[in-house]
Image (cartoon, rainbow, N blue to C red; front, side, top):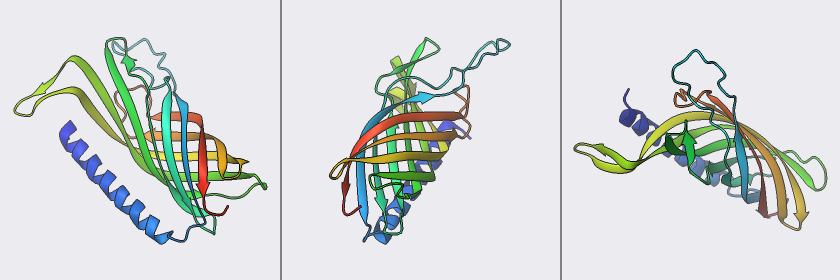
Length: 207
């Protein structure tokens, strides 16, 4: 399957996930709370130490990843969330090409209350990764024309957890971690990456 066909399937899947998120939003129209948060984190992954290969795919790690998330939690402490994170700066691919990863995911969430001021969020879901590879001269395809970046799209599974601390009134801070299993992540050393960071957010509705 070539890159264009694979990207088409991933875009269709993203549309299906978006439609599911809208339906879930309607189902939770009387949700107890909605959390909106902005934050940042870093990406961690294993490094290839094998010297037997002529070309070693680099580890997908490092950099600062700004993030945005929205959670909708029902009175029964179940809900859903949507997250997006991207590399703030272009990164270097083995020292010869710049690239920028973008992650997005949609999850089912269980949010138990731990103490009066602390809630946890445990989530599982799916999404995608888009890696933009840049070239100073651009990428040209005929008859499609030229582009400054070439997209590589991958489906991923997401597991996440965080601890949400009520800082003041409806404002909270939240350390968090997301584990991504990226299907057929051939451009990099490993299919598994970990994004860790923290967010600050605001809760709408009762807690």
